[in-house]
Length: 566
Ligand code: ADP
Ligand code: MG
Image 1 (cartoon, rainbow, N blue to C red):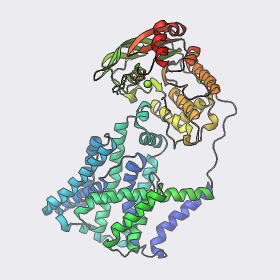
Image 2: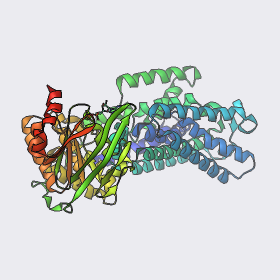
Image 3: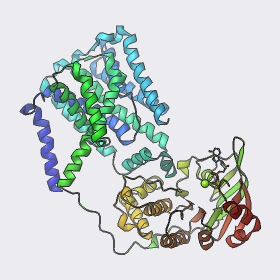
Image 4: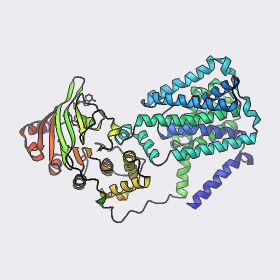
């Protein structure tokens, strides 16, 4: 740990001093200043694209906009400080609007929307040359008074502040939340994340980094031309961040340094600019998808492997933390109907599930089970009817707002592969108990894994685990925080015989904690062994409801279900 710190400190000091030492040809204070300011701006794109996975093409426009704003105001006679503040504020406000318009849209539309925004800013710069200087550029004389070394100091300090604020922002619960969104937005919503709001928020924050970096860069360089706001510039930035390494703290710095330095080595010629970008981007995509940082960290870890995992408590935490014992009706489904165009997927569905019972939903393919599940979890809106949870009407409640009441697993487990098992559980706890300290959420997640017999896997990235383990972790996550209702979509699919026994025990544990468990399951034998009551659907209608043995013995059920299977 101390060794790591020392090495980091030495590296940082060396990097800061490097332009004055002159061992790397062409690496001058002037170049390093431009690199640092560019890297500051790219922290934003690294957040938006690298961390959250939103492919935004307008970041160069967010760099140019505040500078155009401030420059125009200054030329109109406004004092420097006021012009800078106003230019920045207007850009952040614009980012908020662009973010709330586009960030919620699927990837392609976000890309095209931000592309359009880039065209608009470049277009405005060209359309009003009287203000913006048009193609010959807007001049910023104020920066000249600041000498070379002071500029370098400003650039290094602002980059350091940028990196520190970024790592303070993107850690713990926020990191887990953003990685979950990046991997799977539907799963994120089911876990309680308001994905549209979160994405818009990160877009605004990221664009603010671009604005500050771009503003400083324009005053440093002293001139701004319309191309600086343009789409080519934005595309190069996407490539630069990719090259540095998506989602790595130092990715933007390493990417910017490499690209700018290569230009200089190639002789400053605009002749070679595209060629360098092109060849380097191709190389990264083919040979190093995790970018320079991914490659460097991989090499470092081979030299100094990271410390191994936490010690696992010898005795799994007991269940004394048991949530308040619940009783009575938990879920009420009243007159639910759903049409898809001409298909009546569900009609007149009425049933209730009580606290502390395992309730099964069975029926042949196409019966409407998944649709009903989706309506209960809020993924789909019913055409008619109401859903009550603990007596409260949740029919119109957004998916993410239902997370405190409903935990759900998926037919195919939807975990975030790069996160550890415990982090996957914590994503849910982060949303439903945000007021608890991180350590407490971690303890609850660990105890939950323990009671599912998974404590030993806590610190393993789930991508290294088997599919059966995925299913169990997904189950543990659904039930984390002891929600009143747990929805399980075919939990037994793909499990071996001994795993089925384990699963039956786990469901019994959930039940005994007072949760109502609603499961969709094809394995009738399994269902008959664990559920007390159930419902049979066929062609969108209830054909049997009641005690599990009675309904499975029902003649109509046999005809519909086993007839269909035969
Ligand atoms: P199950 O899960 O019991 O196999 P589903 O709920 O998936 O059944 O499907 C019930 C009926 O609704 C089927 O006829 C299916 O084709 C139809 N359906 C389900 N989802 C959609 C959708 N998004 N659009 C149109 N039809 C759908
Ligand atoms: Mg289904």
